Structures are given as C-alpha cells and as structure tokens.
Length: 113
Image (cartoon, helix red, strand yellow):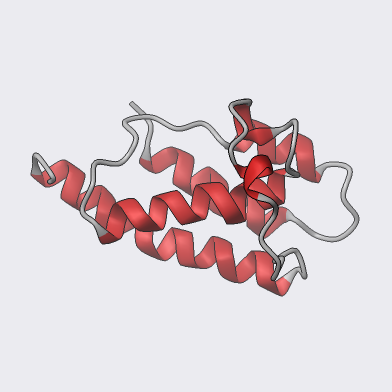
C-alpha cells in the first residue's frame, strides 16, 4: 500500500505517460503482438539486453510491471533513468523517435530524486 501523498501523486502522474509511451510505440509500428519466450523475459541483465531489444523490454517488462504496480497501488521506484538507454537505442533506428524519447524523458523526470 502507498505510504504518502507523494507516492499517490506519482501514481496519478505516471499513468498518462505509460499510456502515451504505449501509444507512440504502436504509432511507430514498434509494438509487438507476440510475447517473447519466458526465458527472454527472465533475464537478469539491465534492460534484458542479452535477450530482448530495448523496445521489447519497454513493452513486455517496463510497461507491464509499471502498470501492474499502479493498478495494485504498489510502491513505484524511487529513482529511474531510462533516457540514456533510449537515446542510444533510437539513434540508429530509422524513423522519428523524438516523441518516444521525449516521453521517456518525462518519465525520468517524475522519478528524479
């Protein structure tokens, strides 16, 4: 259960950002309908870099876990820094990823210590 008003505020503020990130991934054709094998999802490496692309990690690990935490009113991470990885990943991708990285930047801002 949530401890204080600040945690509750983060829950309210993260929801539209998570939805915006999902929508933008879908709009850019980066959303995947088929879930990867469980073994790939069980990776212990940062961003599951050894078994998933960053976009797969966003969809199947990050968005899933964050949405679940919000639904169940579980505590959210106290800090988060996803933008450097997003910038590195998207710099080599064809297409405009500016909005995706902007949304991820806003998520990071919400979790700045």
